[in-house]
Image (tube, rainbow, N blue to C red; front, side, top):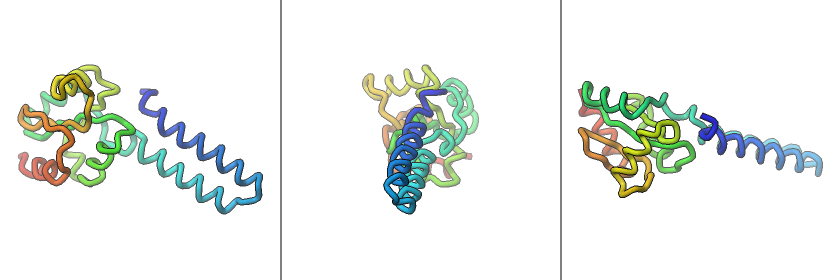
Length: 145
């Protein structure tokens, strides 16, 4: 769990340190803008942006029942963030698996990507697709019952 928060915490700490330095030099406006930017980066890279993750085995079971895609992701991945943002509200329909929290999920991604933990990896009807087009994933979500 802590591993997922390392990048957001680093963004907050760096932003706070830079803002403190700018305030001490007499630039509170710039410090506030910079701190807000770092807080936004921390928020976007936090696990809070993504739907609640479940385990890989549970995701596969649910996908077999409802036909929805399984999305393997990890915090801090810009491609995962792009997929999540471009899916919008429909992202909640997919089954999300955080590979940093679930060893079985990480193993599934490595098996699909020649030993690499390349994310996002989307599994639809048992077939893995590495870093697919978000519009294609949206189509898969709307096609599922």
